[in-house]
Amino acid sequence: MEHFLALDIGGTKFGSGVVSEKGDVISYVASPTPKGGSGTDLWELTKQLMHRAANKAGIESFSAVGIGCGGPMDLWSGLVSPLNIPGWRDFPLKKSIEDEFGIDVYLDNDGKAITLGEGLFGAAKNKKNFMAMVVSTGIGGGIVLDGRLLNGRLGNAGHIGHTNVEANGNLCGCGAIGCLEAQASGLSIAKYYGEDPHQASDDIKVRCGEYVGRGVASVASLLDLDLIVVGGSVALGFGDIFFAAAQTELSARAKLSFSGTTKISPVELGEYGPIIGAATVAISKQRGLF
Image 1: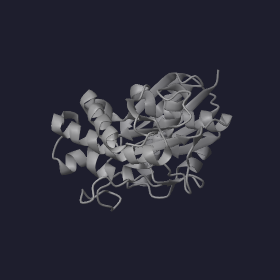
Image 2: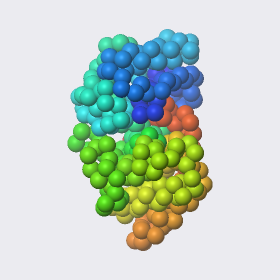
Image 3: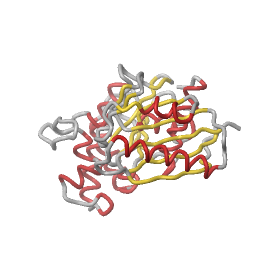
Image 4: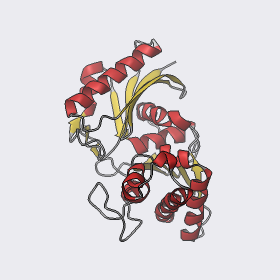
């Protein structure tokens, strides 16, 4: 049985774990993302978590390291610049981990990592065309088309959080107006709607669901997709009222014969989805999947 050391880097938390080739989580540790942490501080936390996860699992040898990290990034050079983690700008995360652990390291965007995990082990298993997305502190995603994960020029394909869903909307952290992330993410709920995302009103849950449905409607029609899988602490925390609003808005805006039946479904991998996804980055790239 092969085991993979996994790392999930997001705006809410840093997590690390050990995951088997079958998608079973052997160990998992996490820490809140430091606010205003320097690049050095962030790297020290990363190393600490990865070593703790390995020690907790009691496994000394790993097939590879898989990383899911918030974007943007330059996938080919291994440099990361997570929008919601200002301490890292063009940080050489891939090389740093290779130097620390001495094994192969595979890096991808955290939204794409979730996509790979759900495609191999979760709600999109055996699907050749689908999108998966995360609605959490920020909003990201990934797209599988004709059985292949889309990368784009620098590896940032699928960044649905920065598609425009409101012409005169909120200012996004990326500098644009009306991005989906600026309208429906955890950060935007707190900043623009004045509500704690963990205690949001039903009106906010519906509004965010509608924005997500609006965003994915264009993607479904553009790319001929019939399944959108959604996870993340905001989406899953909001629950049925969010998913119903997203489906209603999607159905109202995607009217072509091939996109009119597109469904939005919750992820199946649950709270461990991000760390399983990170491991799946390594599993899939080592084995030529997606």
